[in-house]
Structures are given as structure tokens and as C-alpha cells.
Image (cartoon, rainbow, N blue to C red; front, top):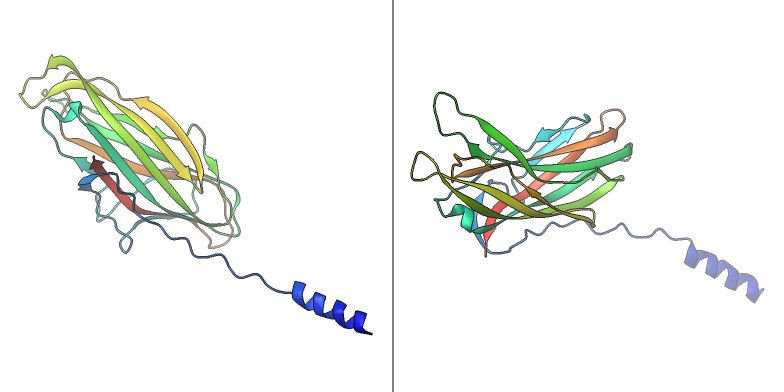
Length: 222
């Protein structure tokens, strides 16, 4: 009889429900002085909620660009573009994956009659990262530095050059790194603009949606 009692007690010890995991907490990354901000905060995020597999840009108050002000010395400096937030994948998701794309919008042709904009991707994954039903953190850090070719534009605040980017993208702790270089334009405006977007793959059921929250999007300098 004592043995039966011990077995019953052991069953009670093993018949328990584990506590839920702690909530995901995003902490903004500080590398140096903040030079410009997209305007998002922990309490005022930019959110993409979708059941679609189409690429979508983050927007806040109708704006979709992070501005980097500068002068003719802009491309001699090193800047860090820092972004991050959370990803919410519903339980009904199947074959789900996610990718981010950081695009430089700042190469602007300064001559008349037309203004030509070049889009240069400075950070993205070579292929989408698999995600699973949960709430996870994501982060992007893009170190940008410029080179000037010596070709001077028609105005004193314009100089030719390229922007190189060393980037790190982390989704749920899975880290990818790479390097990309922008195209060259002989009429390079020293004020740059960056857009950031996300694209989900996979499917969800019913009213469920994929959701990615942008809680930080800044340029910083050490």
C-alpha cells in the first residue's frame, strides 16, 4: 500500500501544466547618437497586418521614408541604420516565411527636365526566413559608408559617389549578414532617404493575419 501511495504522488508531480513563456520584450538598440528617426516608438509602432504575400512598406502618418540629412561630406561618414520590432505569426499559419528589404531612395538626378530616382537595395535576406506560430523579435542593423568618385555635380551640394552597406538581419534569433553596394550617379544628392518593407510568404486561415511591428527605425552615428 505505501508503494501505491508513492506512485500516486509521483503521478501528481508529473501531471502539471507548464507556465506560459514570458512575453516578448523589445529593447531599442543604441549604437550612438540618433541623427534622424522615422517616428515610431514602443507605444506608436508602424504595423503591417496582412494575409497577403505581397511586399509592403512600413508607413507612419502617411510617411514611408527615413531621411538622412547631410552635406557634401555625407559620403565620407559612417552611419548606422537601426530597425527592429516584433513578428506575430498566427496558429493557423502554414509554410510561413518572412523577409525585409531596406531600400535607398536618395540617388536623385539633379538635371532638367526630369528627376530620375534610383532604388538601391542595401539590406535583404537572400531568401525568406521560415517563421512559426509565435511572437518573436526581429532586428536590422545596416552600417553604411560612402565613397566619392571626384565627379562634381552642377551644384555645390552635389557630389558623385556610392554607398556601401554591411548589414545584419535577425529574425527570431536566426542571424544573416551580408554586404551590398549602391549604384553610382554623377548627380548624387547629399540628403538620402530610406524605405523599409516586409514580405510574408505562406497562408493563414479565416480572419487570421500575419503581423510585423516596426518599433525602431533610426539613423545613428558613433
